[in-house]
Image (cartoon, rainbow, N blue to C red; front, side, top):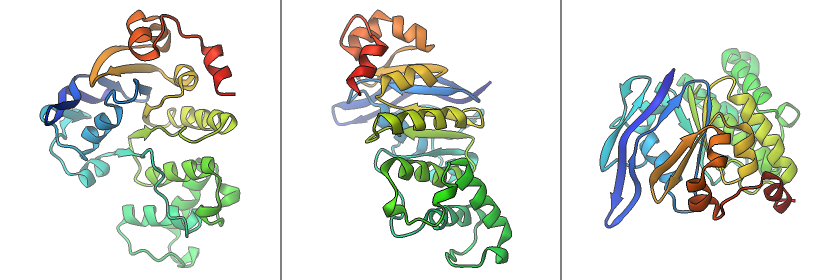
Length: 258
C-alpha cells in the first residue's frame, strides 16, 4: 500500500535544478533507499518532502492527502519526520532529558527536565520506551556530549521517534561511523523498518544493498532507476551514472571500508 508519493516534483534556484521532475511512490512498511552521487539532489528531495523547500513544480501526497503546501509542523503531526546529516542533539543534557524534551513537545506539555518521574508517568513511560527502542537503556543518564558518535546517531533517531512518525526519513545516518558502528546502525534501521516506513539516503552501498526493499537512483536531480537491490545492482545505467563502472562488487566495496 502506498504511503508517500511525489508527482513531477521539482525545485529550481536560478539556473540550478537540484530536483527535476521526480515522480516516485513509497510503499508503506518498506525500507526505500534514495541513492546517487554527490549533487544528485537527495537531500534537496528530502527538503521538498518535509517543507524546508517549496517546490517550483509538482506535488507531494501523504496517505492520499496533498501535503505539498502544509507547514513543517503539520507534516510532522501527520507522521512525516526526518533526521539530518549534521547531528542535532542537546549535548549538555542526558539521553533521557533529550528524549523527554521531544516527548513533552508531542504531548504539548511544559519542559520540566528535572520533574520526578512519578509526577508525569505517561511522559516517562514513553521516554523509557523510546530509549529502549534506540538501544540506549544503559546510557539513559549519560550526557549526550559524552556519547560515541554512533550512540549520538541513535539518540537523534530517538528524538525523531518521539513524534510517533509513520514515515521516517533518515539522511545519511552512517555518516562518520566506523565499520562496526555502521553494521550496528544498519541492523537497527532494518529493525525500525518492521515498525514503520523508512526512507533512507545513504552512500554506504553495501548497507543499502543489504537492507533495502526498494532503491531509487537519482542523477542530476532526476530518477534514472527504481527497483529491487538486485535490479539496481544489475543496471548498466546505474553502474555508469552512479558507480562509475560497469560492475559493482559488494565485497570489493566492503574491503575499501575496512
